Length: 279
Image (cartoon, rainbow, N blue to C red; front, side, top):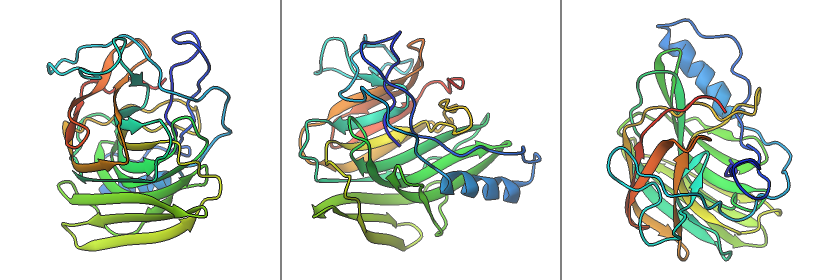
């Protein structure tokens, strides 16, 4: 899922929403949790790519915004204008030479209106046309929560990891470039005791960036960013990004904060602020 930068009329350059979920289809009936879970699996299994548009390079700098919980969206120590995204919140290394990333996190519980939240580690995706990533998804569909694990080599469709995931599960994820276009991807549920590990080939991988992210996915039907699920707060620990990374907050097009970030590159928390409408 490539980072979505701000569009022309909000920033210099070009940028369009690229990551997407396939169309949701007919609405599930309220109260049928099993059907909601089935739909969620179809959605995540169908994460697909769109053609890369021009100008998706670098991090967009916009005015720093104060979050309602008192944290900064981007935090101190970076450029005066701050750095934000329409769909990512977390830490991103963008100066190339990104060969490894890893982190631990706890699958957040979600509630409230329908929404989606993806938690992941990955290489590429900010200024490059591919992403090598793995993570978990927490969503509310037809009023019912659903939780899944997945791996993706964007722009190819994602692959649903069949092992179960529940809120509160302690996850460990890592992606390493091991040479000649090969990547070692691992996702472990330390609570349930399962481990997914694959070595995959992605000859288009550029190792241009590394990231640990909470993301609001987008819809393939409309190409709009979907509402962010209310995950409360999500804590990433033992974060290892190969080099210096920049803190990035998530905002809506009107600059309202959707998710703020507090803490250091090594240990940080993403705070839910606002679901946002589809845009």
